[in-house]
Image 1: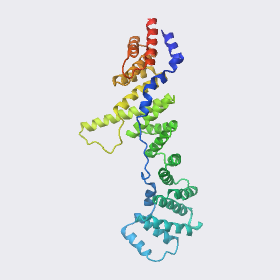
Image 2 (image 1 turned 180 degrees about the horizontal axis):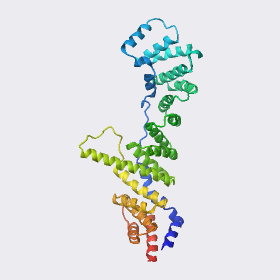
Image 3 (image 1 turned 60 degrees about the vertical axis):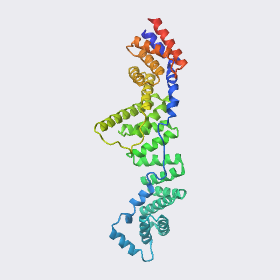
Image 4 (image 1 turned 90 degrees about the horizontal axis):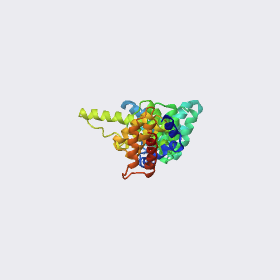
Length: 374
C-alpha cells in the first residue's frame, strides 16, 4: 500500500489537486474585500506636521512671539526678517502670506547661508504649496531639497501626501518605499505600503512587507485582514510556501485577538470602538481550509489533516474539506485508512448546494482504488 500511496501522489492529477480544491472558494473569498485600501489626502498631514515642527515661532512662548511681532513692525530688510515673518504667518495658518515670505527668502538666499537653510526653505515652500492644494507645484522644491539632503525622511512623507491627493499610486508607493529605507521601524507606513502593493496586484511585494510586520510582532485587525488577503492571492498564483506563512500569521493574530476580546469581556471592559473592522468569523474559519490546502501541497500531511478537521468542524465547504482530509490522511506516514475512506465517501456522495461533480468523481475514484487494495 505504501508503494501505491506514493504513486497516487505522483500522478499528474494529484499534483493538480491544489487547483481543484481552491477553485470553489478562492474567488468568493477574494471578492469579499479582505482589506479596504483608503488613502485620504488629509490623512497624516505630513506637510502641516513639518511646518509645525520645524518653525520656531510656532513653538515659541507668548513673550517670544510678542518680541517677534515688534520686530515685524519694521520693513523687512534681509532674509532673516522675511524668515521670521514667514514663521509668524505659518503659526497663524496664513499659508498664502507665509509662502510669499518664503519666496522672498529664496530670492535673497546665497551660498553663504549654507545648504541646510536652503533645504529648509525648499521644504517649507513645498509644504506650503501642499497646504494650499497646489501639489503639482510642490514636487519640484521638495525634490530639490532631497538633492541637497537625501536623508530628509519627512520630505518623502510630504511627497506621499501630494501623490495621494493626485491619485498617483505608483509615485506614492515609491515615496513610501524611500521613506521606509530611512525609517524602517515605522510599522504604520509599512502597513500602508503593503496595502498599496496588494491593491496593485503586486502580491510578492505585498507579502514581503506584511511578513516583515508579522516577524516584528505587529498586530491588529488591518494586518490580520491584509495577511489573509495576500495569502489567498498567492494561492491563486501557486506560491503556496509564502501563502502558508501569511495564513499562519493571519490565523495567529485572529486567535490572539479573540483571546484578548474574551479577556476584556470577562473583565467587563469597554469595547474599543475606534478599532478597524475585524474580519468576520466565517472568513477566518475559511482560512483553515486554505492553510490545509497549502500544507497538503507542500507535503505537510499531518498538519494538513488537522487544518481540514478544523474546517470541517466550522462547516467550511464540507465536500472539499472532507475530500482534502481524505487525501491528506492517505498520504500520512501512518494513514488511518478507515478515516480516509469515510471522508472520501462523504465527498463522493455529497449533495449540498455547493456540491462539485468533479470533486465527487475524484473522491469516488480514490475510494475505489483504496477499497480494491484492501
